[in-house]
Image (cartoon, rainbow, N blue to C red; front, side, top):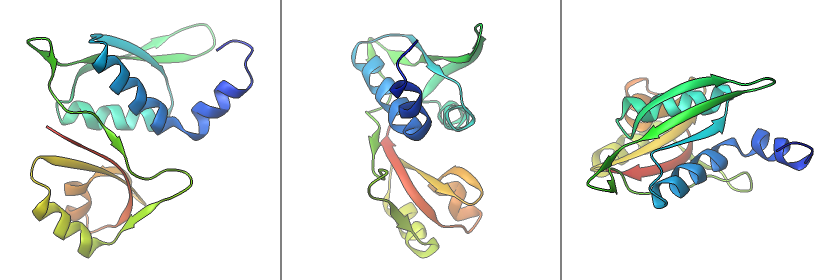
Length: 143
């Protein structure tokens, strides 16, 4: 991380890809905990994942010049409790869902959870339907 000028730019612009790839990599390697760089969007996504019981817990760790988030994952009999996270919208292509299509998606989704970037922040698809908002779909995962 030190003197590489590209790394902070990647984290700043592709925070969500970085976070989900860290989650997927650490699940595959069966690491119980890992650290990611703190920013408000990462913290919001991690609190949503905690609320959905996809991660065990998280703590903030303060270093000299920056703050880290320590994330602990759930495992049951050496297997992760959720499937891998899949990114749908990318910086090159965004997928927008209207409120009407979100209602249909909620009925058909089953055990899947979709994260949306809305005007009210990052929400799950069920929260977005309750608030009657639309937004860009970020990713999905299933239990």
